[in-house]
Amino acid sequence: MVDFEVVDLPATDHVDEGDRAPDFTRPLVNDEYWADASLSDLTDDGPVCLVFYPMDGAFPATYIWNELRDRALDDLLTVVGVSISTPYAHKRLIEERGMNYDLFSDPANGVAEQYGVVNDLDGMAGISEARPATFLIDEDRTVQYAWVAEEWPDFPPYDDLEAEIRALVD
Image 1: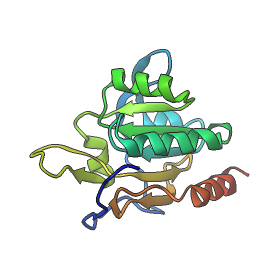
Image 2: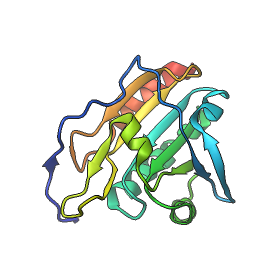
Image 3: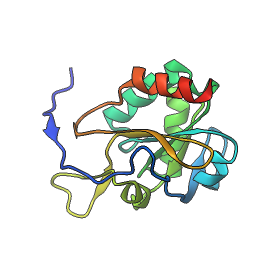
């Protein structure tokens, strides 16, 4: 059993349902290569589930991606992740987890700042990562569903997320 303390996170003014999702361009990593891509490139092809998560290698990242992988949500729409990890770390995570999901690399955490989901790391001055968060975004980049962690660690309500995805794509 992992020994950790649950900590309340400060309130945040995050992107919410009905808001227009901020567009961004970052390296998008898959199991073969990476290249710069924008969120709008993805939403042009249909709805997107944007998943913010802690850096690769952190136990929440493993749990989040294992759950999403096991639910095969990529059969329904595009699911992409965002974290501060490098493209090299993303490539390892994709291979180790057997994931069909692409991951945006955002080492400066600027995308998390745009979305209002920054988590300043205790004891590490000037270092932050994304708090766990999910945003279901339609073709017009309107947020249809939003969940943002209020404590550390916290995990998306996977059943609710899956139900919202199915309602949007059916």
